[in-house]
Image (cartoon, rainbow over all chains, first blue to last red; front, top):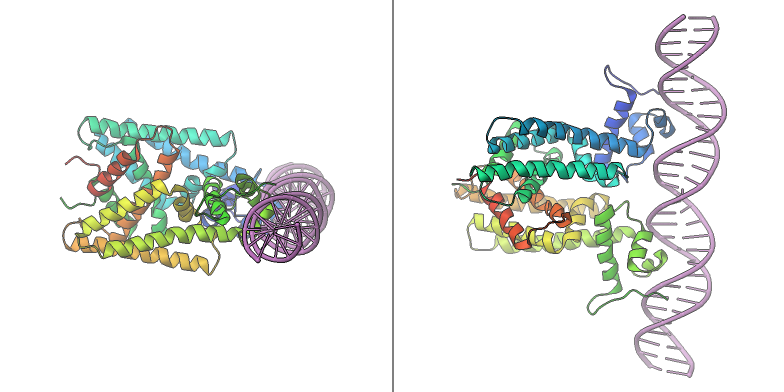
Length: 197
Length: 197
DNA sequence: TAATATTGCTAACATTTGTTAGTATACTAT
DNA sequence: ATAGTATACTAACAAATGTTAGCAATATTA
């Protein structure tokens, strides 16, 4: 009889959630079936329900896991005693790191949250909106201090977040530059722009 | 008996494709059913098949419609007699314009191409890869000319394309700045960076 | 008006989907 | 070894899906 293999400090549910992340990332939430997931876990579909409540619960876990990490981080950054520009750079580096090291979950949380159902959906959207508002506020502060050029802060946030989402392509590319090189290139371009001044 | 309303120079199929774009954008390709689409068109699901071959055909039309426009544009830009940096800016402005004015199609083409099936899938992926290579080559040229700072060109392309994809959020936001303001903010930040120099 | 081609509708189909019930097997603790 | 719990399996379900067949209504053309 097949059994879900676990290693210390991780429940069988953790294994399922993690496999779900990979699968949802690859096929999209809707296109990924519970039978697909079961196969990737090495078990029959019905057996999954000894550990989880529903398919949607898997999406909840993924989305809110990520959202919580980001909320936690922005709390931290806001209370740092550094310039606004440095705060922005810290957040950028955090996003890049998350996208490099927790690729699947972050990606899924970013692209598949639409398929959450209320009340989780509204909850998630609110958190997202809040996060962006707080990020934008830091940028606004930087503009007031003349550390950051006078641009529309919400637009800047949107550019930053989506640009970093592009690390998806890096993950899939055959000739990857190193994670460190990627990070420095991204920071350099997002903070300093393309132009050689 | 309900009939699909058309205006001059657009077939009934065009109407369906366009409604499909909106629906696929909203729900995702997999989650959008033919019955949903039929309702949005104002007709029964089966009736759609008098005009289209399959659901996937709709995705083909959308993806390759967009891909062709981009290929056409990069042909044009490559042959321009201007600096590399200007070429990059032209492409950026084109992408922004596409994302503002053909939101649904571009968005769908960007996020839902995974659900294409071979041979269309490979074909699309190749076109995409080629496009990015050519875009990167322009940036490389700019680096050689010292117009553009020495960064990893493929990474720069990835940042640019994804950053512009963020216009999605702009479309959905309640308090939109104008399209012109958005464009100038984006160009300013992507070309010149955040920092106030 | 008659003839033909378009376009729509109803009904049905085979699949695939998430999920549950009931039961068997494996692990854990006494 | 035995009892009890955790985990797996088989079988089946209702619902939703893309699509087709056959026929009715409407346009278009002659």
